[in-house]
Amino acid sequence: MSALSSGGISTGLDPSDPKEILFKQIMQQYQAKVKTTIDGVIKERNTMRDKNAELEKQLRMMQDQMRGVTEEKDAMSASFELLNNSQYSNEALVSQLLYCELLNNSNDAD
Image 1 (cartoon, rainbow, N blue to C red):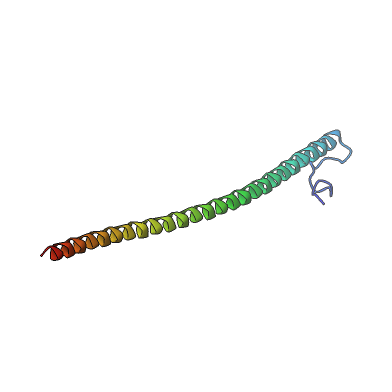
Image 2 (image 1 turned 135 degrees about the horizontal axis):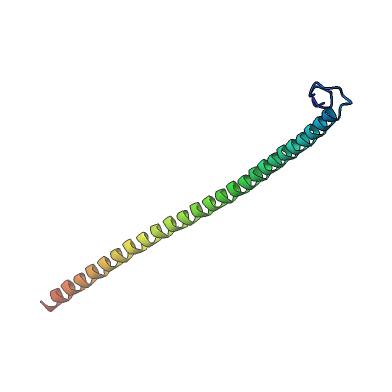
């Protein structure tokens, strides 16, 4: 129960005095505006909290996607590195085989 409705706020005049009645009406209007403002602020705070939670959820999803992309990139880099190493090894083997073939051919010519 508010102080106004319990009779706590007063001008000190007689309760039937028009100034006292007007004062109480103004105070009731003021209290209603304050309550409306407070309710609006609480509603806005709750809305902002919900929006913030949604944005945090979207951020976590994007971070998860970026981790997935990074893992894919790392896996592809490792695959390319293996491929490059195996190509180098294959080229080295081919060179060695050709060298051996040349040596073999030169030994056959002797």
